[in-house]
Amino acid sequence: MLLAGDSIDYTDLDMWDKSGLTDYLSYDTWQPHNAWRVIGGLHYHAPASRDYVYHTSSGLGYAQSLSEGHIERLTELWARDAKDPNENGTPEFFIDFAIDRRIYPPWLGWALKRGWYKLKYGKNTKKPDFDKESPTYPPELDIAIQAWRELSKAEDNRKPKARILAWLDANPKVWTAAGIKPSDQAKERIATVANWDKTGGPTRSGK
Image (cartoon, rainbow, N blue to C red):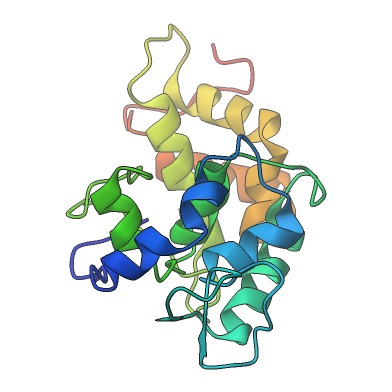
């Protein structure tokens, strides 16, 4: 997600106007193996080894691209986090995936200015963000916050902790994304942290 203090480059607007991006962003779906090169600012057939590459086969302009390492990292994260790494998705889906991992397309400012993309979160969002590559990344806290966000605004007659435990059982993808395996002990810790009702813990039945 984009946080306060993150910068968006609004330069090279004319260059991006002349590039092939408008064609790519108008597609209904992207293929994963092309998506990360486009997000990196590359024509999907262009080499990723140069500092400056054009995002149009006709060479109408140049702009700084993401490094080859960033593009490779997006590919690795997609292989790790995606339910089906071969599944196509909308342009917005792949852009969101990259931004959520703090990897920003060099043309993001252009896309925002021209209305090709809208941020999922406002620039000054207060929502927590975790760098999953950091040695201090807290996977259980990350999952606890996701559970709290999902459940705390919904009406339900069950006790909050029982709802959280049920949510943890029903959402295996959050464990995979966090890089940990579910266990009864981990679920209990997460449910305790995410539980906003501190008057007492429910049983697994929710009674």
